[in-house]
Length: 357
Ligand SMILES: Cc1ncc(COP(=O)(O)O)c(C=O)c1O
Image (cartoon, rainbow, N blue to C red; front, side, top):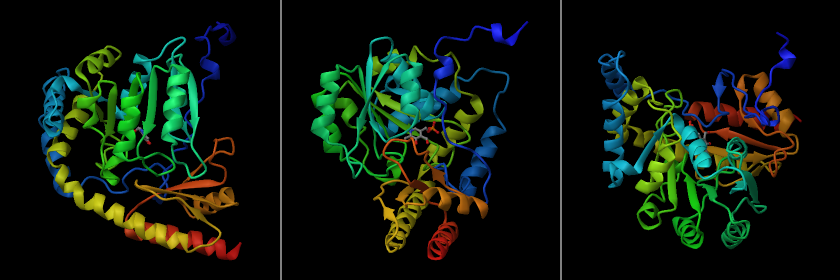
């Protein structure tokens, strides 16, 4: 059979792809992961737990154990918790649940680049909401945009990736109370900010808060995320998932990690302190524009950002460079926070290169 005669789904060819490039760098600060694996004590407990995994059974007990723990921590009902393969899967399903032909989804730009892909996959119409020059959300304008477009879903990433800044919970509440469509708050980096909007779920049935184990809990490889939502909303979003969509290994590991989440507090504090130290140092370089951050990464701008990224790559340091077509991110680089020695080296390489060029 001739390959050319295969009839792929309409629109698939035009579907944008995620533009991140993955490679193993010596210093890998391009994907906002934790540069450290699990704390040794947690790793030991996870490994001991995995020893007892029933590979022959579909995941059940592990799923509900994690749901119960998360629900207990947020003082919500089990039915209000959605688990997913990373928060990615949940966000994609939320877009699906409130999407479809004729439905509109408002999300900020620049923000997490997957939103536009999820909108397209859900066959919804994307309504990009432009952030201002400082990457702040004009809350009144955002509310107006959601209302005037008659959107079925509004999204805020808080703190925002890749810009690093955050809205206050009061500002999020203002949005939640003013719009009458679903409101997804993507809190992938919230542990580095410290102000979650999860309490809004009890007050506003349209609010869905998505969180992940991939960043603060260093589990990007296990692919585990969760969301807190109104029980009816969670039930509807749940319809979009396949049965047994989570695997037992990741669920069992996440269950232990969640039990031991206090072990991660020093790391989160270290990342926040290192972020502050890096921002202060980078700000002393006049040629760099350094944006404030409430996350585990820093966004910087330099007129030769691409050359700087290439130089960093040549010494095996991976940072995130944004293509010139990425709206609002011209000449920007995003650098995740690593451990102190990694940050020191990244800083030295950047400042040496800038001094020479
Ligand atoms: C803003 C934001 N949301 C969601 C995700 C998805 O993370 P995961 O699927 O690993 O939970 C990411 C990952 O980088 C992100 O930056």
